[in-house]
Image (cartoon, rainbow, N blue to C red; front, side, top):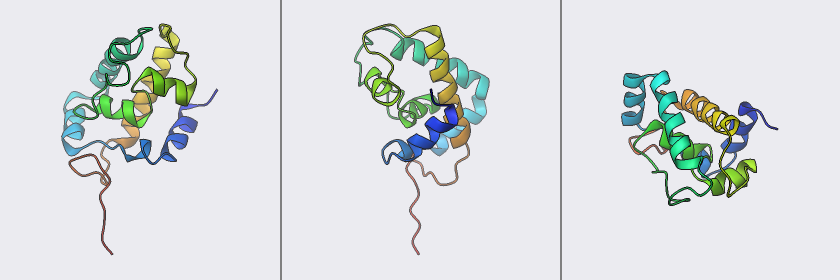
Length: 132
């Protein structure tokens, strides 16, 4: 079983997963609401969007932006059951346990903490390109 740090390092090696960063608007929202509120939102989103055995619109249920937790879900490959299976071997077609939900929330929160106040993200959440 991998640790949160090991998972985050593995995700950094994925061009797609490492392309997600918080926008200035998402960072402002995070600063205004705080980490406790983000954790509650993460718990709610995981329970609603991932925990059911057959989530509604699985594979398309998580927006790509608009909330720090949504961005974290994509950045950590916790956006749908297919990605959870591919990256973490979480079995498909069964409800997530409380323990699995907690592990996902902890990973999301670690990603948010690492990506908060990221000076390399522009308003779209993409990495800034600097000319030489």
